[in-house]
Amino acid sequence: MKVALVTGANKGIGLEVAKQLAQKGFQVYLGSRDLNKGLQAVEKLQAEGFSNVEAIALDVTDEASVQAARVRIGQQTEVLDILVNNAGISGGFEQSALGSPIEQFQTVYDTNLFGVIRVTQTFIDLLKKAAEPRIVNVSTSMASLTLAADLTSESYPTRFVAYQSSKTALNMYTINLAYELRHTPFKVNAVCPGYTQTDFTNHHGTSTVAQAGERIVKYATIGSDGPTGKFFSDEYFPEPANCPW
Image (cartoon, rainbow, N blue to C red; front, side):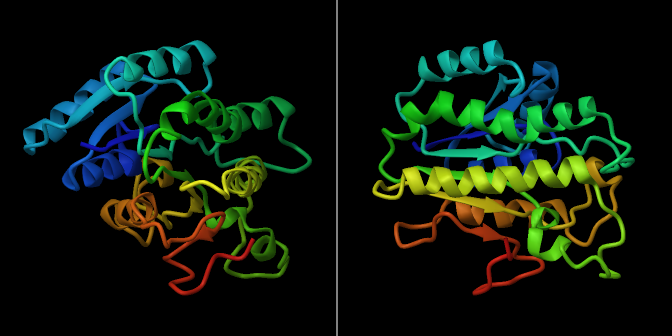
């Protein structure tokens, strides 16, 4: 059985991604900062008939927590086939390039960028043992410099500088990671799940959680002829288009 790890998987998009991967037959580890919430999420999935799911304590901002999760998973499997770096925070809805304190930026970056780097570097040894390893970094079309550079866009009236810039930095990390792994079977991509109806958006949005999950799982399970080092936002830029960087 192939194995997947999804961070931030106790609710919302992360939980849906875990569910859809379990439906495809993966053994799925649901990373959760609060283990009790992760256990509750697993109970929900088990009630739906999924036995191939397990909660694991994983706070992406805590080095000791990430290392402990690596030890725990490594005791059960020598191979990790899929890593979905889903854990993320918005940093609040009041963000300003001039007014937001540096601490707000640091908090957002610690989860959205440094957390991804921390988890990826810690689990890369297990991923390298997979025949077709896949890494999906959950991004957002709001991280697109091209789209944000239109200062007059009526479809882009609200900006979230800490959140957006953290995800833009994540996109660059994704590109460089794909570059370093370009001569291997890895596929590494950044994926925007769309404007999704979750707690993250106060349940506003144009996409359901199921649709968002499908967009991520699609790139987590692409074949050997699939893309790498790309930025996808299927809600706004359907195939064959890519989201502009």
